[in-house]
Length: 238
Image (cartoon, rainbow, N blue to C red; front, side, top):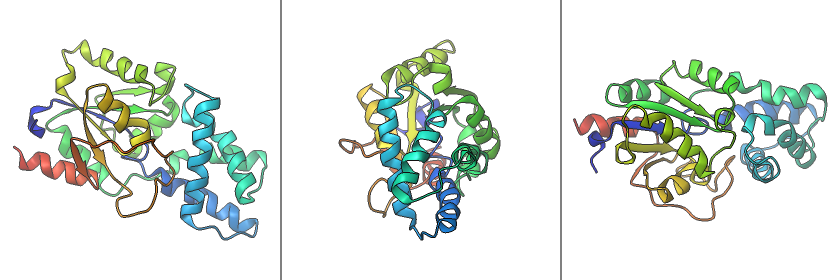
């Protein structure tokens, strides 16, 4: 299916549009240095990814923002970070400072000319409000784990999001789901019948960084290293 035949793009936000890995590293590294440890970025991100995967099992259905205190405690134990109330709560409160990827804002503006844009995020509404402001308020609609009562990769999340858009006449064949995470998004969306676009932000890097490792890598319908690549391909199909 040609890109210009879709009418609605659904987006993973954290990792696809917002550079959560940079945000996490920027918060953790100074705490590690204060504790006398020099820790490289990939070690920090691997620790986060492992801890988040555990919390997805122990706090199933909760927004990832509520998982951040136990995730931080697990990271602190592994990396030798301070375990104080300020350090633990500060991890969650770093969210408003997480940056957009350099191409996100401009690419979303270009894509909005052609598509309805819907955020589908495992965050709560507080965090999404900050992410939306960082991105320039690009979304026509939003769906959060707080709204749904569960989080991706639970198929119920996708069903809830589709139900909201169905009132406007959108059908499954109208969708392209755009995401970085094979674990949270690409695999389950493809299984549910969506066409999917993998934005491989970690292209050329080893492993999955701060994202839990999927059981297998799903082959997407479209594959770009960044969102600018998708926007350029859409413009080229006009």
